Length: 226
Image 1 (spheres, rainbow, N blue to C red):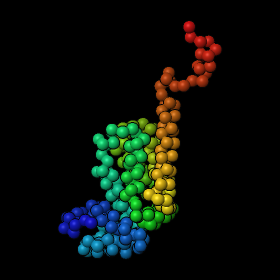
Image 2: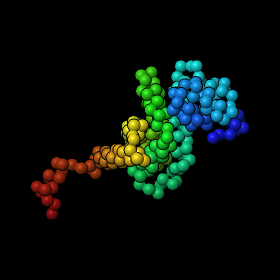
Image 3: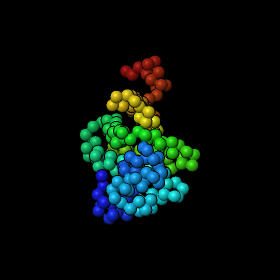
Image 4: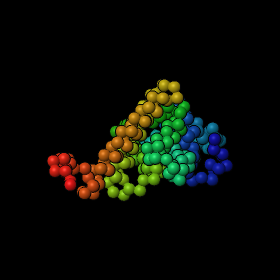
């Protein structure tokens, strides 16, 4: 639980992120509402009026502001727990699996808050912001995984991972299996599929002379090199 003295030294942007886990806990019962913000503030002895100001309670989009802060906190925790230097020792697929799994582990016990967040994010008025949040988290994961692509791959990798993560979250939110075994299996299958796609894509974007050519292969079979 954050220390009140520390919270009082933060600006509103920092306060939002620091208080976000407590708001998420309260959202399991109160939804992503002002009541959840009040509960979080009271839990640490913070003036609820200050917390409400930080999240824009009473303004349009306050719920998404709360959810975005929660996601930002998970992003930050992930970067601290799994620095790029540590992930560099394993294969790319394992880097991505660890990063996504860290995020899922952070949500254990918070499934109801997640379900309510997914409902809010699915509202038409929140579509653009939700897509941006997913993209940002995917970007954070790929950067920690060591991706330095700046071409089309930069965008395709992030779009693919954002879709994978969103699908995994949906499974996780409803998973009743022990230790979320169904989600883990789903994640492994999806990552395997993504890695196969990346391998095929890499082949398609090789220099012309290095690409697989069925015509050239048939020619070699018909007229073998001497």
